[in-house]
Length: 422
Image (tube, rainbow, N blue to C red; front, side, top):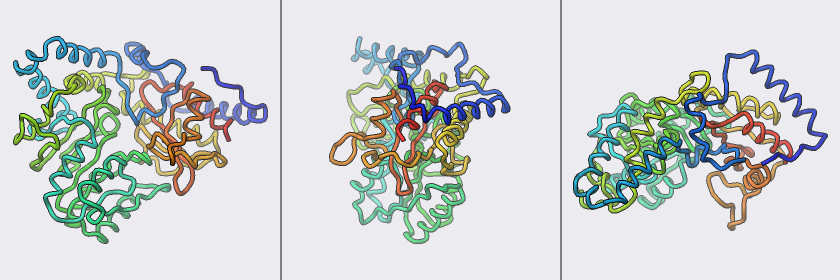
């Protein structure tokens, strides 16, 4: 897709921006938005002409991991009786669980693979449902998790604490959480490792420690976006429960999620393994287990991938995101919404004033009354740019995802499209 030419009145400012970006790039350490040659074609199956800058919503699976996943699927489809009754499926899932456990520094016997982070949260909530006490979660908790909590406990047991955004720092997060702990005296708390909207890397170990000091009985960490984006060691985090998707930033096909637990749990969909949580997770009934079986291939890709400059995935995305946020903020003449300690592979960029975000609800496919969003759909339909945008009380923001396949052209297309739409 070719970009429409910008109006002549916009061209001088865009040209100055390009020059400023070039000067910064020339004066800083080497960074190239390209994969090493070995990995250069691994995402060629993506739709052509689309700037995929919303990786955080659905992730992306490289060709080698897709091939491994399809091989697992074909094995099942060829002879499911043999795959199931021989124990081959169960053995593969135990191997995949052990690989995922190692990725988060957890013992395999304390971990399981489940369908997604919302299912993991529902499993934890099933336990808390049988116990008394207030449940505290951040006001910006993922919508599916919040809905699951309200369905499980009812509004009387669920309390929310306001998440400080914009102007976010780790110190502000800890201060607001501490105020909520003192106000609500919860028995159970769920917190985000990397929140979804707004996208913020949180000081999760310090948050868990704070909960312990305030007498919280059990803490769960929603790390849906964490694995592949930030370092994880469950012992250092210190929570009772930790879960993270592998299909977001760890290259697995949809869907697979690691759940670590120090407490006794039961799956929300028990089947033949009922009574043994690990077995419950490995078989919830007939479904497609291919993505879970191929988790070792996904984690191997996460371990092996390198950029043209030799950077590993998390570092490449962190550096690339910081530069992209700086460049877009300069082009759009806006301020950074929070401290850079809050950036991982996703980050928030304030949008210029004058854009209509009245129908753009963060994380929702349609706006109120099922009408199409204006800016998100305008970017996609008019410019081939996929990006998560939404209105917040303090204005409009874009959640930018920087993935291993993100290119300079993708970011320039986003930058110029927003300038044209203002």
